Amino acid sequence: MQHQALEEDFYKTLASSGESLFKDRGSKFIGLAVPVAHADEAQAALQEIKARYHDARHHCFAFRTQPLQPQNRYNDDGEPSNSAGTPIFNQILAANLWNVLVVVVRYFGGTKLGVPGLINAYKTTAQEALSQAKIKTVYLQHHFEIRFPYEHTGTVMQALRQTTAQIAEEKMGQDAGYGLKVRLSQKERTLGVLKDLPFITFK
Image: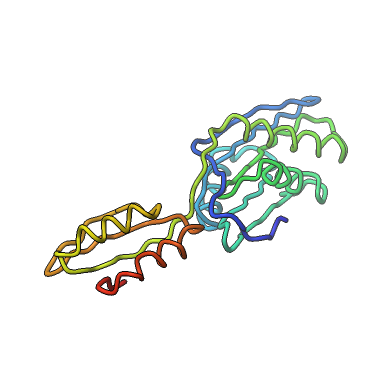
C-alpha cells in the first residue's frame, strides 16, 4: 500500500498545517504536519524544521508524495529501529493522505521510554498533528487545448455541455480556441465527444 500509485482521480491532502504536543515521563514531542508537493519540498521543509528546533535530540519524520509516482520516506533519526519513522508514516497511511510531511521533534526528558513507549508517543503525536490540520480533496485534471473556426462556436459549446469539461482559458486568434480541463476519469469520454466534430483540432 505504501508504494502503490493512486488508482482514483482524486486524493486527500492538507489544506493547512497542523501541530501537536505530547508529553511522556519528561520527554516532549512536538508534531508538525505540513503540506508538500514533492520529495524535494519535503526535504526542504524538514531542514527548516530542524533549524527551528536545532536544540532537540531527534527530528523523526515521514512523508508521502506524488500520488501517481509515489515518493515516500521515513526516518527514525537515532531512535530505535522502527520506533519512530514507521509509526509516523503509518498515521499518514491511516488518514489516506498524500503530499504530506509529518515531523515529530523530541526533547529528551531523561527517562527512557522503551520501544513500546516510543511507538505510542510518535504515533500519538503524528495522529494529533494530522487531526489539527484541515483536509481537502484534490481532483487530478487532464489539460488540453482545442481550436476551431469561429463559425462553429455554437456547435462546440453545445458539445462541451454534454461533458464535464471546464473552460480554463480562452485562446482566440485567427481561429477560436479554448484551454480545457477535465477530471482524469472523464478524459476519454470528453475527448470522444469532441473528436466527433471534424473541424476541431487538438493541442
